[in-house]
Length: 361
Image 1 (cartoon, rainbow, N blue to C red):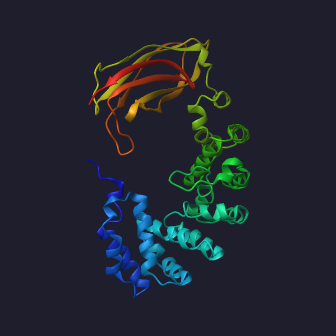
Image 2 (image 1 turned 180 degrees about the horizontal axis):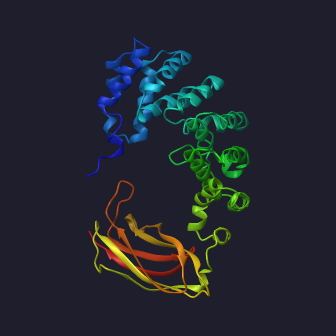
């Protein structure tokens, strides 16, 4: 069984390494006390992010009481702290530095070079959006790609695992100048964050994102890549305007026939092959986005829907056989339950065929 992510970090060895690193810059650091505080009776019950937060709180108990002095130690140590443990440094700022505005923001800009300050900046944005975004806009011109990425990633309205930014869900206008500045960044790492930010915005303001994407599309290879990735949720939900932007054919002229599964009685852990015929009734070749949707049976009779991509390519008029395997093996991000599951085939955002199966233990 694959090792759980939470067990790969904040191990006795990595916490010892963190303590040793801090001791180089703060000889009085109580390493043994720190380890005892970290590995208390509740530690094993904590998930990864909770372990990070717990370790940050232990740092507060073992570093100098002066926030400024503690921050100075952490800044010196930052280049040498590796792994997820490094996230404790910006987390320290998030927890204890909200009243030390400039000192804290400068520290976050430094820490993000070595880990990421994308979570830690969000309380500052919520407290004073105008001042925080003025700071982030300056970072968008930084020489370091990690810092430029932070300028976009930190203000995403719906950043996973992170504190929400309600004001930007309602009005994302303060984000747009940063995305404009970064849309042709040399780093794919940075441009991908721009796309993720736009994808977040599209969930609340699809027309705004489509207006921007139509303006950017076709201007450069960089912006074309951003636009395609930014529109992924709009494409999954079958947004017609997004489909037209990328030249997908009219789904009314494309049929799905004969959807079958190669296993009649699949069990959890099995791979099931889907097969169907795609009947393209256009006069000439057309762009087709094929996806399948699994309606997973969950606990207490609930259903969870997830969309998976099959292909995205040009199809000639005529009939085409399509096959795709889906795994029903449990993963860290998905647990399967026995019961009725349904699988549907989507063509250019429109559901065309659906069949059910009974998944057993």
